[in-house]
Image (cartoon, one colour):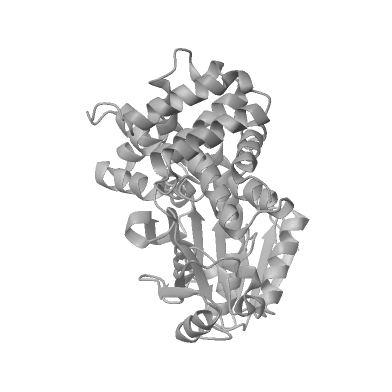
Length: 428
């Protein structure tokens, strides 16, 4: 059986080198290595934990190092992060075990010259406990406490106020709810709860999304007969609420312009009772195939998938009753689920609103008079949200705003999410 600490080291090093998504890297590692159930969980906890707490860990390690962290050998630095995370945040791992296993890994990975350094620094971390800067309300203090860059703290506090901002930062450090959407064309929420219970999975109804369940200790969902029979799909509550705001009904024609992996397309089809048409587009053929796969498992025959560029208008398509624009975004609302997002290059984020506006501007050409359009992002960033919608409304007098909503994680047990519901004037 393989060592989960060793696999965590290798995975984090790859993530740092290739700047890839943590969930995909973790899934890939688990699929290609032989770990027990407990070791899979421990490995996943280590990778996510180090990424999530990196700024806090850096601060604590720097208290006991003479040289800057950036000058450390990458393997040594990553091993120190792994060791410090276990010591400071994993109560079930004894300090001596975390330290000794880290020292062993220095020798296994060709950096035995640093075994003494790792041993001494981690023992100091264990003696000192979790250390934070002086609690003075500064950006630096909150950056270290919540392990996010100062720029993101500043953005959220200035945009949403200290209470909302700090609540979202606190929530991002906790375990994320695993939420599923009941396939209402096949079953009900209570029936699914009973079925899941029989399969060994406990669940509770979501407080705000009527057809959502939060699963507890679910394990491998794809192995469940209820999953294979298409009785549910995994979807965050905010995405489900977004679909409800589109107000679709049976027989409608609905376009989902940035649809992959297809969760919203499927939810819309379920709300419609699998009657009508949901055309789901995405830019890449592989992602379109994933939408189709999900729809087929759920038995949703009205979902029609196509490759399509959301920035380019296709005059061959008939007008739709409803259009969903869940645009590419910085994803700041997902930092609790994908911790590496918090470290995105601000220059990349600055370029997004122009693309987002282009997609929204293109989407409105598909909407029939009197129809409804929803613009959404999984980002807590007014430049990607309110500013884009405000510009659109100024330049499109035939639209008016029905609803503008930001879903904060701590309020709705979901990822951070924004959506605006826009209605197009009817024929005169």
